[in-house]
Length: 378
Ligand SMILES: Cc1cc2nc3c(=O)[nH]c(=O)nc-3n(C[C@H](O)[C@H](O)[C@H](O)COP(=O)(O)OP(=O)(O)OC[C@H]3O[C@@H](n4cnc5c(N)ncnc54)[C@H](O)[C@@H]3O)c2cc1C
Image 1: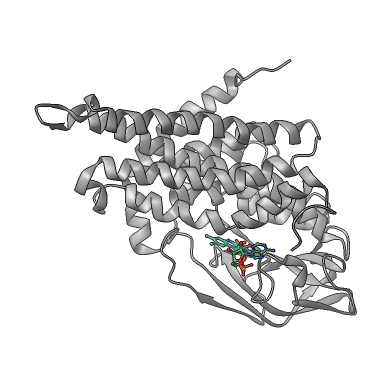
Image 2: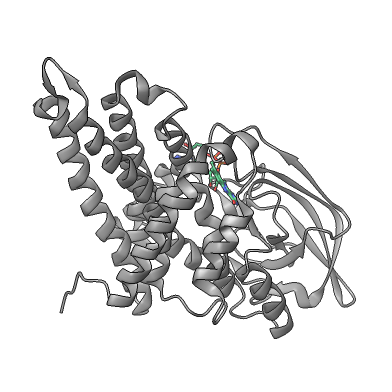
């Protein structure tokens, strides 16, 4: 039977996080953008709220979705860190216990951050074209190559994908490793991004980086399906964080248009102002449930690849459009950095690309609809 309600515990979590986000995150959102730093102390507080009792295991998927939505209302860029322990639990499912214990504890406290290192100069949408190699050498692997779009470039540990089986191509022969930041042979170059500046993104160079064989996470040569499965769910989190930013902007705009007067009345009295708000509320409502449907399906062990792709191409797009519309409804004030709207727009747009572009998502959906034989070719 369908049930669109959250449990009382999930509702409590939502209220706690919303109050925290509006009180402690939102007032500082612009500051971290200017400083290009993430608010470590605030993230540690969120982690204490979420993870201390039973690190990495406490949250169900729906609650993790609530975290993405509510934290993004205050600071879009804190979501990645707040869900770090959850990601790690997924990544480390098949990892040696020592590795799990070390990193889950560190990331769950907010003390350490993890970054995903997948994209390469020649392997963006075509992830299987990856060239980074991991050569076996006794009880170690030696990694060489470049990852060129790592969010959280200042992380303490990198989840790196590399080819361990010489002669393989495409998705076969790829393994995953946890590589601590202080491992000799790593170097970094940061980008000047238009948004998400509190979470630096950039290049990770690996020059003969030696890691113990026990750093390998998941099956040797079989890491590709692992990451694809993770991405399906991560797309719900991306959707929900974009919607959190859009919903907060919509709430602020509703308050604004009721107080701003022109032509002798509140501007909310003009259809041209009220109808875009009505449209935004409709889109957010529909999109939220699509995101939660993914999480619900994954909890039940059902496939959610098509829904993940639907959310990924659609939800960041409508979120950016809603934020843009709300910016216009604030007139010239919306265009200033005194309000958080322009920053939200810059931040959300990046996630139309991050984790897979709209075209690639539509290819995934087309394949499901038409079958590979009749779907567009890559
Ligand atoms: C904010 C942000 C955060 C990111 N974070 C991370 C991260 O933490 N870790 C990580 O590894 N990566 C990360 N990425 C990288 C991201 O996943 C890639 O940028 C994305 O997969 C696309 O690859 P690309 O940029 O090389 O584009 P390309 O693959 O070069 O694509 C360029 C254009 O061509 C289109 N295109 C490509 N192939 C096809 C096709 N077959 N059919 C139709 N159109 C096609 C694309 O849709 C796109 O419009 C991030 C990116 C951004 C913007």
